[in-house]
Amino acid sequence: MTIAGGDLSVRRRTVSASSSAAARGPVDGVPRRARAWLAVALCLFALLRLGAAAESGVVKVDGPVAIASTGDFFVCATLDWWPPDKCDYGTCSWGSASLLNLDLSNGILLNAVRAFSPLVLRLGGTLQDKVIYHTPGDGRLPCVPFTKSESAVFGFTRGCLTMARWDELNAFFQKSGAKVVFGLNALNGRDPDGGYYMGGSWDMTNAASFIQYTVSKGYDIHGWELGNELGGKAVGTLIAADMYAQDATFLKWVMEYIYEDSPSKPLLLAPGSFFDEDWFGEFITKTSPDTVSVVSHHIYNLGPGVDTHIVEKILDPSFLDGTARTFSDLQRLLKTAGTSAAAWVGEAGGAYNSGHHLVTDAFVFSFWYLDQLGMSAKYDTKTYCRQSFIGGNYGLLNTTTFQPNPDYYSALLWHRLMGSTVLDAKFSGTNNLIRAYAHCAKNSPGITILLINLHSNARNDVSLTSEELRVVQASGATREEYHLLPEGGDIQSQVMMLNGRPLTTDADGNIPRMEPMTVDAAQPISIAPLSIVFVHMPSYYAPVCS
Image (cartoon, rainbow, N blue to C red; front, top):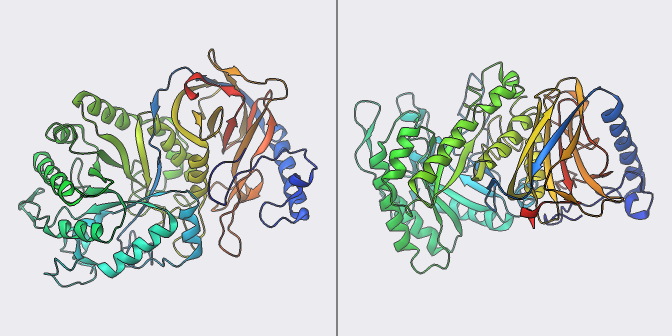
């Protein structure tokens, strides 16, 4: 099977192959390296089947009807505004990862974005509402950097985006093929009312000038988002839902005017806030059905990054299940209101205040992250934006070296293997520590199943069952497996192993190939303790996938 992904295609490999094709190395074609990899792979299978206590279970997949669908660009990541002196709990983890100082010439950065072909990048975060755009048409205020200030909202004074930097960013986006969502400064012109609420009307003159400049330069923007965490369960200050609805309506009118002669119209997203049913319900009700394209919300359900119990929460199925209520309630609100708006997770870093080193940037976090992708997809979430692509302790890339952290590879495998049609998958077995999700395969026949084993010392031999699925070419049928484990068995390792091989970039900064093992489809899927596996099953035909 070949999965689209630029020059990073995924190719079939049988573990018993001795042909010249199977002897080619994963990167440079050296047969010795290929033979070494094959030996490791065989050892891995021995470990999976013999090295741990065994339990068994069954995944039942419902094939005739989809339970939900994701957008074509489901996987998304964020770039933020935080300057180097953004510090949490005595640690400053942002370095040069801001939209204002990120090294856009870094080869790993370019290759990491390009590998998704395309990746949605959401540009925003807490300080977006304090950014002034220094456009030719709106240069009223001096262009100064963010400065720390204990008396200022969010701890920093206003900052500035020059159009020279905006041009550089767009050159990078065009080169990497990224699709851009930009968060606008919804606090401009407003002042605190003496309490929790922010008073006054939004002055969108600066935002309109910025949008106009962007259109005049021919920059392709996938969407414009209004504000960051200013509604719902707001952080720092709150804008009333009816006022937010008025602002969104006005922004919609301005966008239609500026883009009147443009062949493509960007999305309008709002409010980019933590979900509160009453606030979100009023906001949705007070905007017309076609005003907002996307209702976006944020997720940091693991608590503060300083929490020492984050790993325990990640490995607790009942805790993971808690987020389903948010997805379900928002889905119900949108259906009840009759709006055409879709649901997005606009920002999700798990643990707020920049995450937790060796947890949110380590292998263990893929249990939370992939479970979030699977769960949100079941409730019609169209796009899920990970905080962050780079920056803080929860970046998909290391802030200093730009090397991909484990979740980068988890995101890339999801992007390449999981199609947009979501199937109902239910696991039953001797314990409740297996998480199971199923989609139609992406750009390939059959289905793809994601299995997450939260058990610390038992592998699970999982069989697939369904009353509706039927096997095509059952005799000799095979499937492709992508087993993810941490290096050295340490779930807090920052190196992910795929089928026994560490995933690292080469000397030129190229993202490594991610090749499956080909396995007899008649055998159960053996998933090691505290590991993850994607399984592409081309011989299983689900009617809805056709």
